[in-house]
Length: 110
Image (cartoon, rainbow, N blue to C red; front, side, top):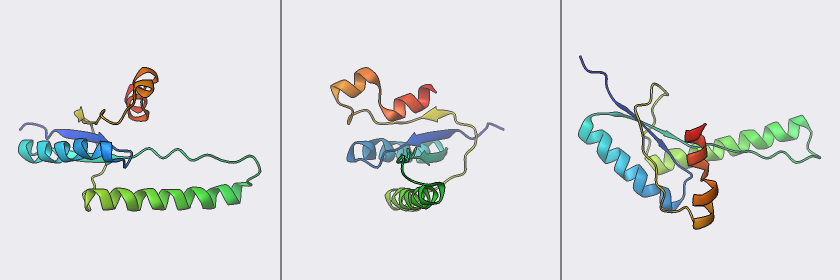
């Protein structure tokens, strides 16, 4: 029996990332693949914040990101497993970002 294909789709919630989401959903339906959507949350800590204040802020930011992801994907969530393909948009990256790399591109390289 053939292993089911899994597609990873990173998003930054921007309008430029929506075409990649739509493409990945259509691709997954056609191929009967599993799809995993992800967003990397980079939380800055200010020097004058104590641990308790930072943790409260980080929790708030994580909650907001999860809510945005759920809203954007209309409830389509999967658990992390082996990734066979990565589908991402590049239309939103400006010239400078294409030279130094986008957040999603850097995530994939790492």
